[in-house]
Image 1: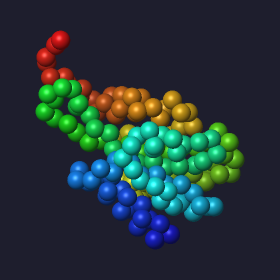
Image 2: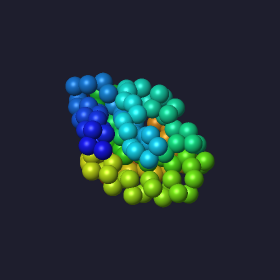
Image 3: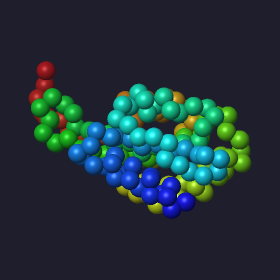
Length: 144
């Protein structure tokens, strides 16, 4: 388990690092063991990994404050727990206990999403939830 957590911890640091293009990491199950599945920078690739037969933990970087000429861009992080619709009740229950282990590695996040609904994984939906959770959604003050 220590090696698995080490791999996840390295992926977590990579996602949080402003100097790398990596903006997501995905943990999956190999039998009953949580493993680092993959990392990447393309949101569509990230979203394509979630299917109805999987239990996954995703860690995602979301950049907010992207209006034109906006001077304050901020990286926020999201923890996603996915339990696919076809996952058995026993495996669903195991996710809740395993989440504590995942959170011991993926420690800092603005919001947490637990879902089995693909709509919740749309980029605009996630970004909107992050902005809403931030409590301060200021514009530049310029109007078109």
